[in-house]
Structures are given as structure tokens and as C-alpha cells.
Image (cartoon, rainbow, N blue to C red; front, side, top):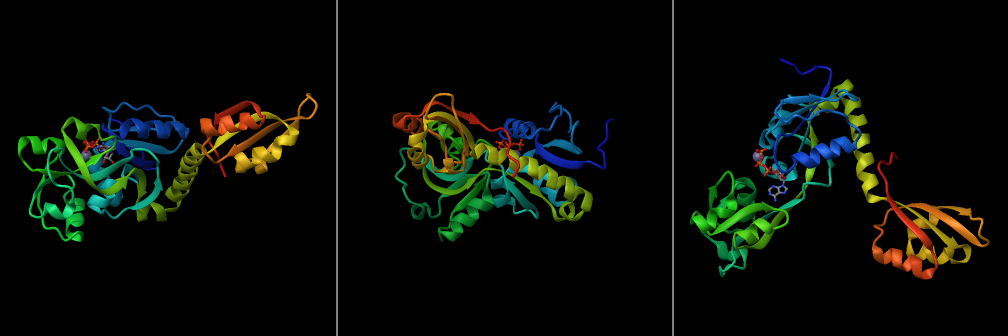
Length: 292
Ligand code: ATP
Ligand code: ZN
């Protein structure tokens, strides 16, 4: 049996679920090379002292807080729900979802206050409980592990508190949202012990630099265009980020080539405006990594 290597940093990720694919893609885009047979318990990186453990997401906070693993990637919703003794290092900008209160489409409930003494089915009893007590609305929580959205059809409860992303599951089950409790996304967590230990700390730092490089690159675009020199002030008005751009002359008299990294999202509308004032051959390219 292959054993974990004590010298490697350990990162726990979800074995098989909604976060798995995007987590694997994120790790790979950070340049980590590893095989991911999810039937295995763990996978060792070939180019970084890191072992990736595949676990049930609900178990990850405990593994991290107990120091069995150094790092974990989970939904922020689990932090709100379980309040484990872990430290959040980074928001990872995927796995977006919200915890919401929903009722059957045809129901007359429109307001939280009207839910007094109602049965509420949820897999998030702590988050739901705290929310309703903050609202000063006593309710009867029924804890369900999965498929909370079918609870109203089964007559378990009229009201549910559940995670949604696109909302299509709710529509499919004839439910409507009456309130959002919180938003969530995937986060990277660690524990004090791993942060204090020197070797791990420097490896955690290296890994964080890589992760941040990928995340900031996603907020930037590389833009290239040709334009008559005299319209440069107008271009800068359209894209303020162009102020610190590289401008080189073209063979064509009075024309320049402009290159820049811009923070703003370059939408079609912006491109059309650039074109309208006289820019041509506009190219917007994604950036893979930015190390600041
Ligand atoms: P496991 O078998 O690992 O315990 P699970 O069924 O508890 O899996 P999933 O449904 O795979 O968990 O959800 C994992 C995480 O994905 C959630 O904790 C949440 O952060 C995120 N997520 C994103 N979108 C949704 C969604 N629409 N519904 C539920 N979770 C979502
Ligand atoms: Zn789970």
C-alpha cells in the first residue's frame, strides 16, 4: 500500500461532488502536475511537495482543524455551518452558490416573518437556525441529509433552506426563493499548526503565490490594437488602464501599436467603442498567470 509522505504538504479536496472538477482544474491551472484517480485516497504531485487527498467535503474541515492535513478546499458554506477551527487563506472564485429560503411556487408565503412555527427542511440546520433566531422567528427545523428540494412534495415540510447556484433545481421542483441567507464560494483553508511550522509555511507561501497568480490573471486581459497616434487620448478615456501601456510606432505613418494589461472586463461594447474612434485589429487575450 502506498503511504503518505511526511515531508509533503497535504491538501484535502472533495472526492466526488460539485466542487471536484473545478478544484482539479484550478490546481492544474496553477501548474501542479498530478494524476487524479479519484478511487485512490490520495495523489502525489510530480512537481511540488504536495499530496492531494480525496475526501468527503463534510470531513475536510475536521481533517484540517485536527492538523491531519495542512490545507483544504471546501465551500465557504461549510465554514458558516460547522464553524471549524480553521483559517481561511483565499477565496477561489468558483463553486458559487447561495443558501436560500424557498417555498412552493403556489404558496402564499412571501416574507420570513410569516414562517413562524413552520417546519423547515434543511441540510444546514446551524445556518438556518441562526438565521431564523436572528429574525426572531421560531421555526421547527427538520434536518435532512440530501435532496432537500423534494421535501415539500413529500409533505416533510412546506419550507426549505438549501444551497442553490443556477436555481434550476428549484424551478424543476416548483419552488420559489423568498430570501437569501448567504453567498458562498470555494475557499482554501488551513490550520494554525501548519502555518506556524517553518517548512510547511514556506511551501504554503509558495503554493499561495501560485494560486494568487492564477486568480489575479483571471481579472486581467491583455489588449493589443493598432490606432492613429492622434486618437490615443480618446482610447485612454475608453480604457483608463491604457495609461501605462506600451506604444510603438508602426511602419504606417502616424500609426501606433498599443499593448496593455487592463483590469476592466473588455466587453463587446468596449471593443465597439474602440473601433468607432478609429482603433483597428483589436485583440483581447486571456492571461494565464500574473506574478506581482
Ligand atoms: P460529499 O459526498 O463530498 O459529502 P455533498 O453532496 O455534501 O458531497 P455537493 O452537493 O457535491 O456536496 O456540494 C459540495 C459543495 O459544492 C457545497 O458545499 C457548495 O459549497 C458547493 N455548491 C455549488 N453549487 C451548489 C449547489 N447548487 N448545490 C449545492 N452545493 C453547491
Ligand atoms: Zn458533503
